[in-house]
Image 1: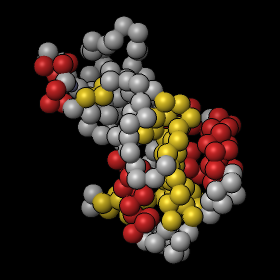
Image 2: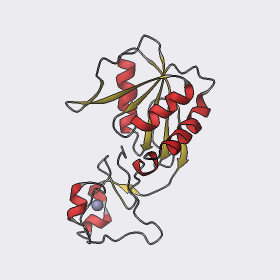
Image 3: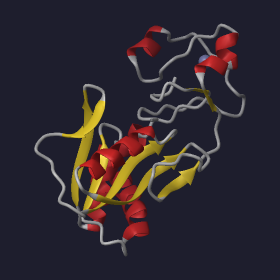
Image 4: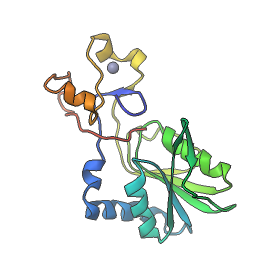
Length: 192
Ligand SMILES: [Zn+2]
């Protein structure tokens, strides 16, 4: 079970690469290279998944870094963060699946008057299909199956949906799920 609620045989855990600051810095620089000419004033990311990579992109661009988070289910700017009218903002996430978190972050910033120039992520697991309302790039694009639980074949077979990295999975440890033979389950926390 992805954070989006979709079911997939692949779960990516970006925290495992971002735990290494040098790797995080390099990934941030790689994303920043796409936007050097865009005069980005601020990088914004949805918490928690976007925090580390967003910070590194901001560092590489010499920009400010802020984040959005959910308050009563709605993505908002908190902690005294604000944007000025027309401020040029880049939205950064770790992984885009449906684009939901990025889209909500774009909307929250635009509601505050920002000019959201583009969005970016380390991984796009939507095969390029996710639309977030602004131009978007990813360092790597994956074509992996993600399905609505209502049409999930594994669920129809009665297999339990597991959210990797959560306590539930540890409780379910040892119980193996059927996986595509070529696709071992990786973990990833912030699939949106
Ligand atoms: Zn399922």
